[in-house]
Amino acid sequence: VIYYNPFSSQRLWNRDIFGSATWRHTMPSQLGLLVNVKYAQNHLRYLDPDVLNSAGKLDQQYDQREFFSSMAVTYPIGRSLGLSLAGDLVVNDLRTDHAGFAFPTRYTGLFVFSAKAKLGGFKVHGDLLNTNIYEKVKIGSAAPSRVVWSPAFSVSFTPRNSPFMIRGFYKQIFTNPTFNDLYYTRIGNRNLEPEFATQYDLGLTFSNSGSFSATADVYYNQVRDKIIAIPNKDLFTWTMLNLGEVDIRGLDVGIKYENTFYEQLVGSLSVNYTLQNAVDITDPLSGTYLHQIPYTPRNTAAYNVGFKKSGFGLFYNQIITGGRYYLGQNLPENYVRGFSLSDLTATYENSRASIPYSLSATVNNIFNAPYAFI
Image 1 (cartoon, rainbow, N blue to C red):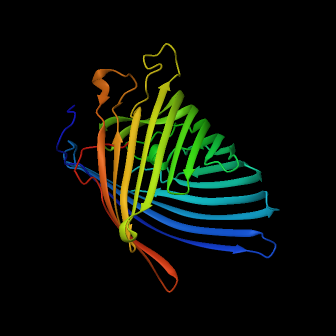
Image 2: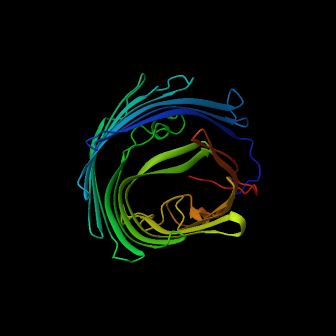
Image 3: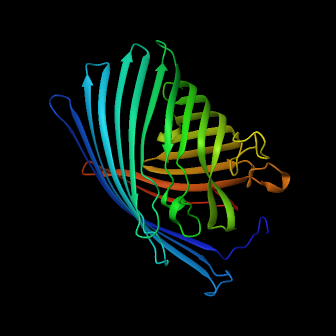
């Protein structure tokens, strides 16, 4: 194994096509209706010309389609209470030319009931999400069907005439394995279990007349059957597995500043930092007990600086990721150095016949730094 190899002949292509439409209507009774439809298609190709097999290369291609529709109904009750009901229906399928492939199709139904209330400086919001997943395959066994209920509750308080807001939330999150996790020929693990997480968050926000704001959050997550990826034969082949129990404690801080300078030149700056301790607590007798889980850095930071004038904008963004470990044991030989990734984006915004439009172009990784997102 060669670490930090400066050359690779492996190539990955993605081609994404999507279209969406939205319809919104408010009735005289203040009943609101929102309808969304979307179609998306993704083509992925991975080529490794150096694989020593009978074909002399590894060339894999996948096509995934998604049909999405949703409807939401909102109903305000006075000025301080609101109710809503929403439903999403999603159909996904995955195709390839590999012999013996499963050719899976997934049907997903998401239904959520929400209620929100405002009383003085207090705001309260509650959700109850029902997730229904059914899969079928042409070859082999499909992943089991799922029916899951996930509650969430949040509250915030803003003292009168104060720039501070105190907030917190409790949330249960269900994460089903993706098609990539379950069915990709050299990656998929059909025995992969869904991930269940319980999240607690307490935060403070400061906002000064809209030009400056700062946030700070402390959080604690309890995760069961966390889905992680471990490197295998090459950059396209990973082993997907579950970690029994993971304990995550972290801190998020961020600031935003925007001001108008000479001749309507608007400058903006945002900075974010995350400290996260995510450790394996599955088995006290294991060699990975209380070790940071793979490919999860303790420290990450990002900042964005930009300028806008007369509809034109130029923005520089940098992500800084600390070191992490590529296996469960936090040994020096398993350590992977951090990296810094820089992007440059140019934008233009305008409107014609009262219809707004925008254009943007981005150059990713302008300094050609080696990096890996897992």
